[in-house]
Length: 491
Picture 1: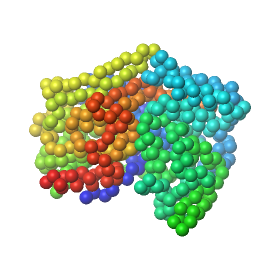
Picture 2: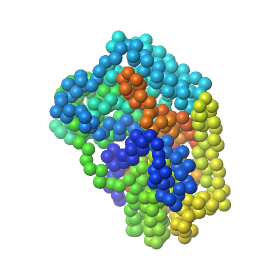
Picture 3: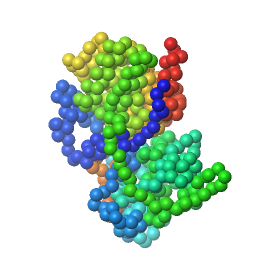
Picture 4: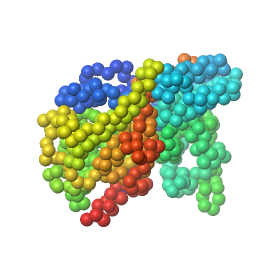
């Protein structure tokens, strides 16, 4: 049996952020993304997949801005950077956001959804004469949340980059303190607001398609602690000491805490792509913490298939529990190594092109098409003897998101794997593909936002289009142990 899974944000690579900040991709970039020179002919399709890259606000705010004075107290810092703008300037920024949605989002070809415009009207009606940067961030967050698009978001202000000085964990529906004086105690309230009420506030300010995504981002991420931006998004004034109430079983006790700097540990604990072979239990575990389609992924995958074949391994598990997305081509490449891939169905989607909505139906490849695709993608690396004919499991968590969700959908709907774990973080009928890698920026508050221009649909129309339901549902931390249990029972 393997040790329990634990999600750590620090295992997520910074590759997405690096690409997002780059205005144009060079030919060399395309080679690196598409797997080197041998796969250059796939560069066009890979470039199309690049816009599926996912950056969550939790990831964007882990690096402390070097320009901010570390010695300055949090109260002084917020006062210094949380500037105010006029009501008229705030309205101008809101209209800019609405125009970005109207001009780009796949849902807004004819008009912006009523739910979004109604929320914008409410926000404008309730504006004060002066609006702080944090207030505008929360206002725009509430508007964008009405799109129900987990990829559309407004980035928190840079100065909200600290954390509460204790670790947390979500256990059996309870928010538990894991360090300090109240280790082992349930956190029941912050500033006298019940955690359940704070969570409802968070949901009103966070873009999501299914509740599993907000549950994950509120209780679990970024790394089992409470970040300052999350408190501020819920309306907590982080410039002052924050009162936290704990259930100590005998009574509820409260203590005031100051936020502290986020110390980012070295990212050397686990590589983004790796594998392990357990010969005793005839199981190969392929860990993929990001969907990249490049030469390193290709080489690691080929070596995995070779070792599985040489050691006559009968089972494999693809671990996507820490995977926030990337390039969907990674799923297709993995599937090409499976012997029972006799037919392959891909995702259909709508795409916004100027003021038109284009529909692209998913393709169905027959056995001959699959063989041609194998040869095209793998070239001289293709070896029929390496095709795997055993049992395949795919592990998911609420953190499995974007292209990682598509990975699971492709494998489930093409009957290639048994999905074990939790419902992934977004919907099979989901929005995707960022319009701009640089994002949009409001002129007065300087807030950056991202939006999308595609919507995908479930491959297998007979299955749930709202959630991808694992074939075997267990907590993410127990998924690999469940695979061992299934293997043992099937011997």
